Amino acid sequence: MDFTFTKEQELLRDSVARFLGARYDLETSRGAVKSDAGWQPAVWRGFAEELGILGATLPEEVDGMGGGPIDMMVIAEELGRALVVEPYVDTVIVGAGLLKRSGGAAADALLRQIVAGTVRTAFAALEPTSGHTMHDLSTTAHRDGDSWVIDGSKTVVTSAPLATHLIISARTSGARRDESGISLFLTEFDAANPPAGVDIHSYRTIDDRVGSDITFTEFRLPTAALLGTEGDAWSTIEATADEAIAAIAAEAVGCMRKVLADTVEYAKQRQQFGQPIGSFQVLQHRMVDMYLELEQAVAAAYLAIHSLNAAPADRARAASAAKVTISRAARFIGQNSVQLHGAMGMTEELAIGHYFKRLTAIEHEFGSSDHHLARYAELTRP
Image (cartoon, rainbow, N blue to C red; front, side, top):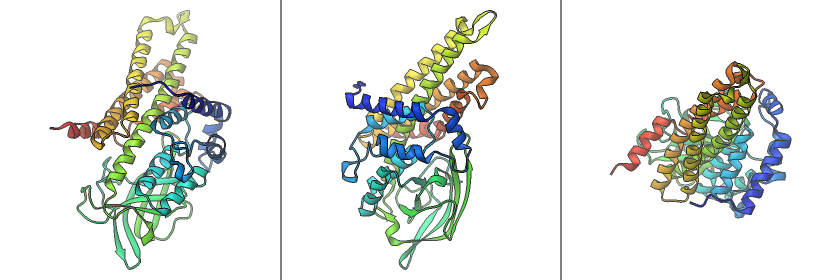
């Protein structure tokens, strides 16, 4: 693999880093997540109008820049390094990925609005009884005249309170765990003013993001709300989820680089027994172990990124391997960084605790380690 960035990719990385360095300090961002809005709309507009990163990886046909997986990795890593809470992955990777793979004039129109920064999406996929398995669906959709009627419950719909549009997965045929018979539906959405047939409970997650639990009771949508072909959405969902795993793997790498750097710097300054704690050999060994975990995580993230355009089975294996490796590294580096900082590691004033919470959440996004170990085993079975 060639890990060398092109000049354009280096410029992209430097531009994102400079923007965030100037406008995304910890105090301001943590204040924003605790506000009623829960995010910084001005920063999102800056992503669209000043940086152009909302369209960097989308096709030129929808006003994007036609960038590839490496560009996505560069952006996601810098967003992770700055601990950005704005819904980049939920909108640009998941929402745009589902729309792009589904196709159609309505999807293309919405993609253009994502590039412009006027549309944000959330994906209602997981259910209270499904665990991490996105094709385990009890939510159903059936035709009734010129409408689709949706019934069921979705849980931990991340970014739903910020979304202008909701994408819903529902079963239109087949048994509960079948991969066939799954369809996608698109609807305009406002969590503060839900339509008839929709009940929403929103909350702030442990990593200072927002999510919702949503219940649909005879929720009616027009026939045009169907994305793609009825009953044939699983391949679209799986490919998009693997791309999202690669994106959060890159985000986690950015978080872990920042956490490790801050921990090493702290160890050089913190005095104990009249000398810096970084001079103690046992703590030096601990930080070397953290560095090794980071390097393994980087390699796994790169493999997932480079495999996004591979055959589906190869892509899925690389994504699951990356998720397991990233989860292990995130836990090891996060926990040890907090321990090396002592009690102050979990205070609101110090960045380490906020990064630790985000790394903990990443462990469970798009499937836990156990889920992906089982998936990898299934994919490698003769």
